[in-house]
Image 1 (cartoon, rainbow, N blue to C red):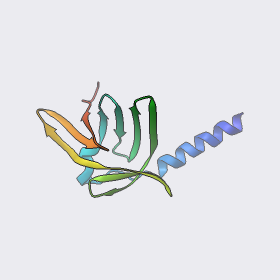
Image 2 (cartoon, rainbow, N blue to C red; image 1 turned 90 degrees about the vertical axis):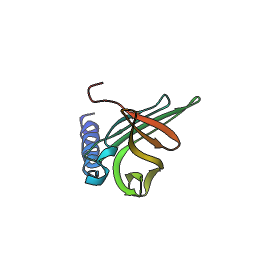
Image 3 (cartoon, helix red, strand yellow; image 1 turned 45 degrees about the vertical axis):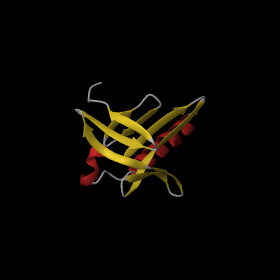
Image 4 (cartoon, rainbow, N blue to C red; image 1 turned 120 degrees about the vertical axis):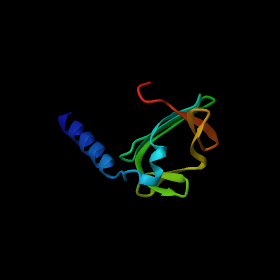
Length: 113
């Protein structure tokens, strides 16, 4: 049992080491973003945690940020990757920060909430 725990810890550290920090021009992407059906956390260190509920189905992706392709961003390890399509990059709208990812408008959660 201990050996399995150490293997899981080592894999977690390896995944974190694969993340690429956000480039300075993409720092606006960092933060916790939410809608009623989606949650997206992007850290400045380049880790991404995503969860989306659509009807009775749920999808989640957790992994390192591999690259930006224009406004879109790619998350995953090696050939196992997911591209998030950003049709509206982070922008301020009425005092709140918003971004549209995979067709869903998200609002950044203020720090501390």
